[in-house]
Image 1 (cartoon, helix red, strand yellow):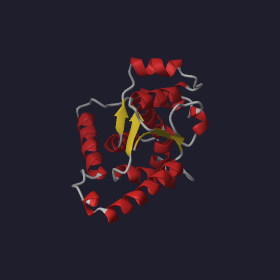
Image 2 (spheres, rainbow, N blue to C red):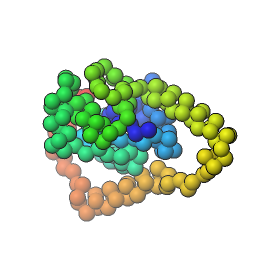
Image 3 (tube, helix red, strand yellow):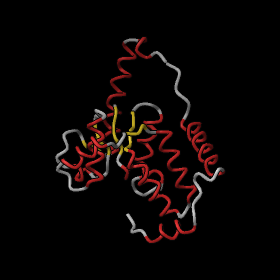
Image 4 (cartoon, helix red, strand yellow):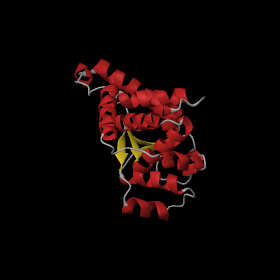
Length: 199
């Protein structure tokens, strides 16, 4: 099942926000195990970087958050076509409208969020992590039944590299950029960050 993960769910896991972190971690475990195909929008990544950096006061934590997200998720492009669809939608929040437009553009099957009301009127299912995991559990139960009936159906295939290997690779690349000055930041940037309003 291909789903778009709302920014708030990713932050629940990255920032260990109670009482939501348990459901978010269970969802990401299902994605890591390739039971679900998770997508985020390109704009979600910039939001994650800003929010994690602001709340932790750590540039390294923000970079690590991006590395982990990139390693786990596929990214939905945000281009002019998507922005025009979002602008023409009936959603009051433009960020949510962009996420919905990305999900529609990429033919995804649902959006996973804690704030279903933000996507009122959407033409595809809006699910909480619990609701998606329940659907997944029902599907796994049906799959297990099929495997019992047909051993060929349960044939095991070689899995992809684990998420930690991908994260380490991205973190290594980020360190290389930093050493060359590509990601260097100034004191002024930190001062500007502290002036921005919170989320």
